Each structure stands twice: as C-alpha cells, then as structure tokens.
Length: 491
Image 1: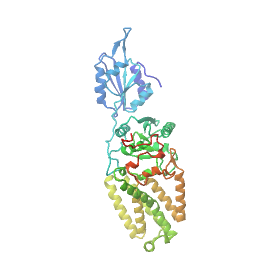
Image 2 (image 1 turned 180 degrees about the vertical axis):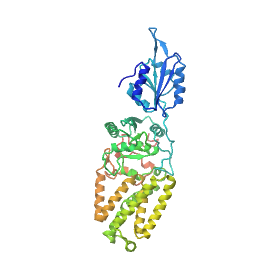
Image 3 (image 1 turned 45 degrees about the vertical axis):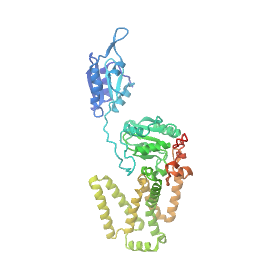
Image 4 (image 1 turned 60 degrees about the vertical axis):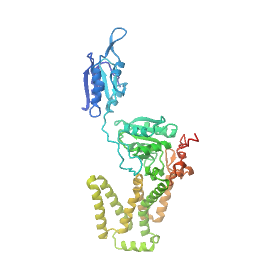
C-alpha cells in the first residue's frame, strides 16, 4: 500500500477512502507558526482529553519550522516527538499500518510538510473491572480473574511473575477482527518445541474473526472432533502463572477472559487452585472424591439401565425388590425412561442458564420439583430413575471443566447399556482407554503420568504431596530447568 506523503490534504483524502465509516473522526488544528496538523482517530475508543492535553495543545503552542543548513525552513520529525508529551509514540510505515493502528484504538497525528505520521497510543477501550471469575470460585486463595482486555491480563501475569524470563509474543489473528493473541512462556523453563509449534500453527491459519479463545483452542487442537480437551483453560491468573512456572506455554486472547495452556494433561481437571492452599491430606481426599464422582456421574445411569434389562442380579436383593415395585406399571422401558429423565435434566439446565438471573434459579428449582413429583405421581417416571439422574448431575459438577465431556459420555454409555448391557459398557470403557492412550497434547500424552508411568510425577495427580516433595517440575513436560525448589544451603 502507498506510503504517506508530505501533503496533509492528500493523506486525509486517502485515509477517508480507506476508512469511510462515520466513527472515524479528524481533528484539525494549527501550530504556533501556522503549520496545519490533524489527528485521525476512531470515536469512542480514544482518550480525547489526553490527546488534547499532551498532543494537540503542546503542538499548537510550538513553532515546528526550523532552518536547515541551507537556510531553508523545514519540519523535523524529532521536533514533533519532543513536543508531543506522550510515552507511546511510533512511526507508521505506510497507510496499511496507519489504518490498523487507528482501528486498534490508537490515533494518527499528521503534519503538513512531513512525509510521515505519528501513532499516539491513547486507547480508552471499555473494559470491566478485575473481579473473581464466576466459573472458578475459591474459598481460599487469590480471587482475581482475567478480563476481556489482553493488556490487563498481561499485567496480571507480570504482577505474579516478576522475572526477566517471562516472555510475551503477540500475533495478529483474524483478517477482519485483527485480534491480538499473546503467547506467554518462561524462557529457560518452557519446552521450546511446544512454544515453536504453537507459534507456527497460529501463523499458518487464516480466519475472518476470532471473538474468543475457544476459536484458538479449536485451531490448535490436534484432533478436531475429539470429545476430550487437548488445551487447558483457566480464568485465574494464579493458576495460569503456576502452569507457566511448571513449564507450560500460555495463550491470552484479546476479548476473552479465558486463558489457554499447553500441553494439557487429563489429571488437570481433578485439580483445583484451592488444593494448593490447604493441607495435602485434605487436597488428596477432595481429588479422590472428584475422581469417584466423575465415574459415578458417567456410569451410574448406564449401570442402572443395564441391571434392569440384562442383569437384575447385579443389585442387592432389597434394592432389587424396591426398584421392581417402582417400575412395575410404568409405560416406558428402562432405557427410554432414563433417556427422558436425562433429557429433562439437560433442558432444565439449559433453561436456567438462558433465563434472566432473577427468575432462572427459582423457575429451575420449582420446575424440577413440580415436573418430577407430577411425573412420579402420574406413573410416567419412577422415583429411582429421578434420584439416579439427579445424583449423576450433581456429581458431574464436582469437576466443572469436565461437564461437557462427561455429559456426552453419559449419553453414549446409556445408549450402549440399553442395547448391549454390561458387556457393551466394558467394551466401550476399553475403547475409551485405548483412545486416551493414543491421544496427546503437543506431543505430551494426556494420560501422563499414568501412561507412560512416571512415578515422580504421580505426586501431584489424584494424590497431592506436600510442597517439599515437589522440588522438581513434572518430567513429562520436558522443561529445560527441572528444579523449582531448593534450600539456601544447596545454592
């Protein structure tokens, strides 16, 4: 694209062609020696007061022309830089770069007779305040969460990692959105191969719009249609920086409060930030409880249907008689009944999310109670089925990041249990195990450290060891510096 010229009017006409939108404004003024100047900016995303106080007003009170060695008057770029009292200043190479900076929220200062412009970083983007994320609430520990502004998120990371080894590299992804995607890592700690692969993949895609980090996660995922995640997600800076310190690579996306981390291990879903602020004994109990709850949530409805249709002897005699009396006159088959109750649970969950918050909770609770009680009283559904689905739903939410995957697996197990019975459940479990064994995240097996078995890394999985037993970083991440804790006597 053409470079800027010395003629101010010509530059303004060219910018008007490239940016015809009504929100692109131009403020024109003169310097003390009558040199015509103009500031081009996007309305609503620029701090006009700063532009006036630190740029327009100082220039209007300054003489920009100076004599050169030949005795002729000329305007020097250095004079403009010294007059504009602003910390963020740079020169655009051409109209293309100038347009990108204006659309990004910066301003372009043009001076008649100067064959370049000056980018003034006076952004004033609307952002919400830093607050506790709604998806990861902790009783103990930090309560700050990421927001939609990537610069603020970078500052939250820098606040916790005050080291020159912390590196940021920002890329522009999206032909129309031009979204800033920042890759973060600790130099000398992160696996260089993983970092290079992420940067290479981000540079290899061309997409129109990137409104959220989930788009980046989908682009980076090695298996596009897998129900299991291969990229970690978090909304908390303390978790994000802890993963960076372990040797992972992080990704921040402008416009999204959810940060990404890679490589991802399946055991990360069992971990909570609160586990590191309580005793290792209690953290181990909570993690084992979450693990049991996940298996119950996914397998309990399928086991109930399988036992009813194929192997009633799997149940204790007293429980078997109770269930038999409850389902004796039901019009639906066990698998169809469980399907209806699960569908009802998903509908209530979706409705409670979409409803206005003032009525969503009350309507979802009342709806569940009224529908459940009415269905049982009318003989349409059985009490055991409602209890099992409700318990399964509660158990699944003990691991919030596994809810989507767990919901899909619960449906698949239910269909297999109703058609093939216990044999089908065992067969599908074997298939899932094989699938997970062959899955990886940027070259790292997601079932690690169980497969491949790494005894040292087992200390922070389902069982949580104390801090002094975690002196070295996880071996599976292949960090360049494995030591993370030493005593002063060892140094």
